[in-house]
Length: 368
Ligand SMILES: NC(=O)c1ccc[n+]([C@@H]2O[C@H](COP(=O)([O-])OP(=O)(O)OC[C@H]3O[C@@H](n4cnc5c(N)ncnc54)[C@H](OP(=O)(O)O)[C@@H]3O)[C@@H](O)[C@H]2O)c1
Image 1 (cartoon, rainbow, N blue to C red):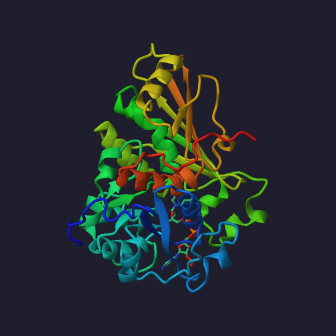
Image 2: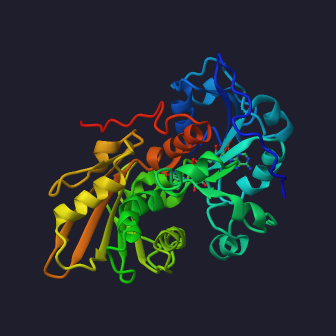
C-alpha cells in the first residue's frame, strides 16, 4: 500500500497551472477530459497514455482537438508520469486502473479514476461485483479501496478536496444519486420500494467496438439490460445507504436507447408525509443544491431532456408528486461523457486543487 505522504497542491507552475496526465487518452473519457483541460485556465495536459495507441502522435488520432504541445501517446510508465504530472486522470477499462494508481500515489501524483476500481469501500465488495473483469486479475489494494473518496462532487466536496485518490462515479449512478440523495438525506421518503428506470446513449459503452453497439443492432430500438443485479445497482445502493444511514436495496433498470450521448434517470419513491406537494419537494431540491451551479432544478411540470445538457457538466432535475399514492417521481438528465465522466473528473480536479468546482467547465444548458 502506498504511504500517505502526499503534499497537497504539489507544484503548480504559476504560468501554466497544474500538470495533468490523461491515461486512456484515445477513449471517450480521455478525449473529453483533454477537450476540457485544453481550455482550462489552471491545468495543462502534459502526458498522454494508452495501449493500442501508444507511439502515435495526438494529432494522428484526434486532429479535431489540437493540443499546443503535440504529445506522443506513451505506454504508461509511473516514473515518467511523475516527471511530467501533478495529477493523473485514469480513463481505463475496469481492473486496469488499480494496477497503475498505487504506483502513481507512491510517486505523489494525485489520481482521479474514472473506472469502478475504487468505487467500493472494500476489495471484497469490488470482487463480488466485478469478479470477471478482466480475467485473472489479482488485486491486493484493499486499503486504497477504503481510502478512496467517491467523487460525486456535490456530495463529497470536503473529502475530495483532501483526497489523493478519487473514484469518479459511474454515469448512471451520477444521474440517479443526484436525484435521489436529497430526499434520502432529509428522511422524506421510505427506504424501501425505490425504483430507478434509466436510459443511456451508446457512448456509455466506450469507444472500443462492441457488437451490440453497432448501428444495425441498436438503432430504431430501445431495450432494457442487466435488469437484475446490474453493476451500478450495488454502487447506487452503497452511496444511498451511506447518505440515508440505513441499508437501502433498490431496483435499477437500465435501457440502451439509440442516441450517442445522454442519460435520463427517473426515480420512483414514496413520500413519508402524504401532505407534501411537488412544490414543497422542489423547494427541498433547490435548497440542497443552492450552492451548486452544476445542478439546475426545473420548475414543476418542466421535464428534463438529455439534449438540454449535451456537452455540459450540468445535471437538470425536476419532479412530480402523485398525492393519490404518495408517489414522488424525480427525473434527472446528464451528458454521460461530461457530468457522468470527464466533466465530473475535472470538477474533482478543481476541488482537489482549491479552485472553484465548476471552473473551466461548460455549465450552460444547450438548446438546439
Ligand atoms: N463511457 C461512459 O459514458 C462512461 C461514464 C462513466 C465512467 N466510465 C468508465 O470510464 C472508463 C473509460 O471509459 P471509456 O468509455 O472512455 O472507454 P473507452 O472509450 O473504451 O477507452 C478506454 C481507453 O483505455 C485505454 N486502455 C485500455 N487498456 C489499457 C492499458 N492496459 N493501458 C493503457 N491504456 C489502456 C485505451 O487505449 P488504446 O486505445 O490506446 O488501447 C482507451 O484509450 C471505464 O472504466 C468506464 O466504465 C465510462
